[in-house]
Image (cartoon, rainbow, N blue to C red; front, side):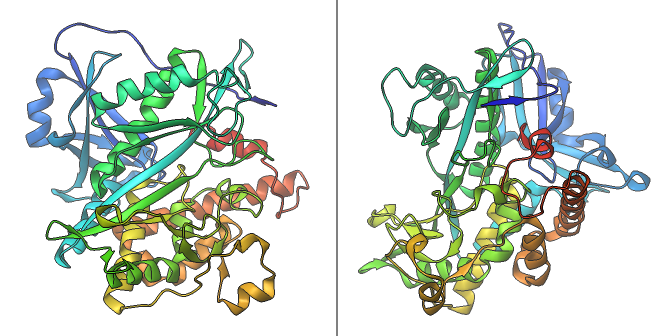
Length: 445
């Protein structure tokens, strides 16, 4: 399988001894793509107090050109040094006219966390972002470099040393690697890292993708988190393991399984699952992954240990009690996705919703009549459908705060561009094949 790309971004690998001479100030756009600027190290204190101004009109999903002045202020708790580049890196919050900027994704998540805290909860999330590795050659063709399979340890998995190198760099960014393994697809990989509070985990997702891409580049490879880079191969998911804590104790622990709080939280996510898809699976390509026949769930259901359901309850009790939300993919903006999922779950808690569509059977093997009897619905089949669901869902709209309007406007334009591409090439809208349009737009996710 060969994928042709027009251009590949490079990552510098030079190292300078001593304190970093430059600090990289990082934020993400509406798509979750890292953006930022570098300042000399001696300007860092000024940045902390005054911030650094930039043009928001050139950032996807931010300000219009007639009112574009924004200011980025670093969050000193996120300061870290990049081992292979000799620079420092720090995340921040965006401000406009002295106040938090409503469309700042990191700020949106901060607001959601504050709403949770008012209810006495603290959220912890553990993500599982998957990625593919491709080999570059001089003509910029990308070829799969190994033919290993799930959990392979033999020489078929030629990327095992690269996974180890990624894991060794992760602690420098505050990530604790826990499990490294080959995934189901040829040249598909996963490195799980320890859960943390929701904001730190969202930062960690951005950092992890940065590390993976940089190390792959150093080794002459290219890493992509695109949800479905190759038709017929498993897609890249980002399962989310979620728990809420209250007064230092896991609020999901029940006397015999999950607590009522956990069940209400599950019910909230199931209730809003169709609208959530627009945020947790926000690209045209996301819906090439969400198809029957692979591990990606398409049916709105839940169960214990059941990997065919949308929400799975892993077989861990005590402080390990949690849920696994299985449809998100790593093209999602983690700040917006976490905010939306947490607010959907909180809605279930506040309204004391009861989870429906429970099953321990393989949902993919059920008839449509049996799924209907159990109340099992289906996730949207396209980005266009998901956006329609989002516009009808007040809870998820409000979870996105000031980013909602920008997000919908940007994503509707993305959907329209895709439809125009299909029409220009007489490709049916329902195609599940991965198009050149998607590869050009999403391969760098």
